[in-house]
Image (cartoon, rainbow, N blue to C red; front, side, top):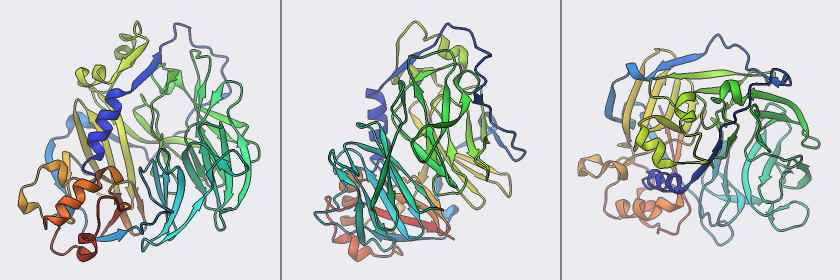
Length: 415
């Protein structure tokens, strides 16, 4: 499942230049307006160097059953790429930033409901929607428009446009946003680059102005102020306490009920990128993906999902994407090079691991959720037509009728 997602991620990252300038300026103690993370007595700490890496973990070792959701496909809701995916209540939200450019809503049976906003220059319209978040309390949706430098606010129930929040001002930009209770947070890029910038900000939900800044780049980001790495910085977004991490952080942050920032998961390893490692590249204005791969260091966190007692994390080291599972009740941790989906596929066919692998996008009260990205539908349909689905998988007959142009297929794993 999502068998092409990891390949595409590697290719995309391989082509990406991470702009990075390590300032020679000294730390400025006067930057008192940037708040530190609060202490968390329940901080999870995992030493990766003490873990044995297995070849793979099977989904049947974690879950007992899987439910199939086939999204309705018509000319009004064709999804070309999944840039952001969330589930709230009984609704699936999928943002396509690049092709169809819109936020599409489906129910949990896969029926298409509606689209929020549209492309254009008028009120309630956007040019390049790159992220969204849901205010569960007030029932609002916020969408970031990369081209317009603004955040658009809509009513969740009706989809009606409410207003714009302008955030691209004073050489500051926000690309990824997340509601925590009634508060709105966003990542923060400030120009020109100084020795100490804020990585995270709280935004006023009326006009988008700063309410509070969090996490000094000097203290939490290995002294790196200038980094633009495409991809959402917020994870576990369906939960009341979502998670946040920047490119060179080793700690996933979370939020308490008051909206204060605190550490959630701390990773330890001699293979984590250090300040000294990054300083060696100071003479180069650009760091390419090959630099990180050749270093053998852990340098890319792709996903963090939690539900009940289970914490799931993906990270990249060298050319490998590793899968980590941590049980908060037993304190046991498992680490593997692959996550084989034997609940969806009949793995007795000895298929290549990448064709039967899975990765999770989010979790709800019903369980963990994975999605087959449109880019992987061709490979998935080939396996379906070849009869390589698990014998007990539901909706097998409906899956057999799909073609590669169909909208994504979703799987919900539970016990």
